[in-house]
Image (cartoon, rainbow, N blue to C red):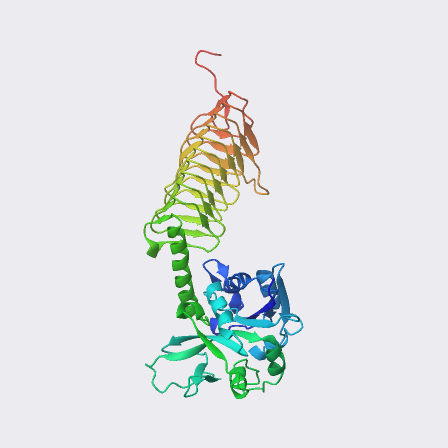
Length: 446
């Protein structure tokens, strides 16, 4: 393990977000911004991973918690230097300290390694990028020889069209130099202590800071919803590119939205208009879309899901779903099934080779293999007070517009005639019809 401590600043409220949610918890492609920063830091194998919390501290702790994370409180947000100063004990024993902003989700471990390497024997290095507008970030000021002299916060730009060097807010410090110097930072006119004061300190001491120039799209911090949308756009492009390079066909990246935690095997095809989110997984050979939503869904090999919504459900292999089908929480569909247009399944276990082609609703049920649901079949699960289950055996035929009033059981090979309202159990091989359903009498029987 290295002797590096990484400090992630996550105490701010993020006023410009105009939100009750702390800034670092705003999601980018399904994950809080701060999680991306922590994941990049973890790739450095740091000895200490420290997160400074303040505004809505408990909420931030819950979202960013990990076995390797040390939390440090900043009860009053008195600036970046105050936040870092509070981490001295937590970072004890580390010879190098990296400070990262929790609102920079696009930063990569490659850039962080470059920032560390750039410091060399200098007191500190810090990340910069060239932009036409520094916005709320500080401007780098150099001396005639090119050495970094200071950072001017929100500097006026004489020529707004000119490209300027912006301080991105990520730092690498010599710890032995940092800790005494951070204690000496003066309070600003706003009553805060700014870490950017240390560039001028290092220059005055004859150990000028090293500016490490990185890519703009990595070093952007996001203070408002406009910036958040830009972060989402860039991250989505990265995710789509990763999947395509891994063997996934994405027919129209411009209309495809895939969250960061989604896993997709090779030889999957994603058609236009799809949204895949949560911890969804799509197996080899599946075809998703067009216009399909998967949320925390597991899709089996060679399954086709068209114009449908799959939520918190598991779909087996070689299944066809849709168009316009909907599986909800707790649905488990077996292999070789056919779930057709406007069919709905919730909290049910459906066996292999089951067919429910149209307008059926299976709620809180256990269904055996090879059972067939005709149009309009419903398991009526709610009695006004609670949910009840329906049990259906193998090779059962459920006629059109059948209503199964739970709790009820249909044995293997049972049949219900069209329009039946089944209120009592049907034995294996039994045939029922009517309202309420009764055993069917064969022609000629008395």
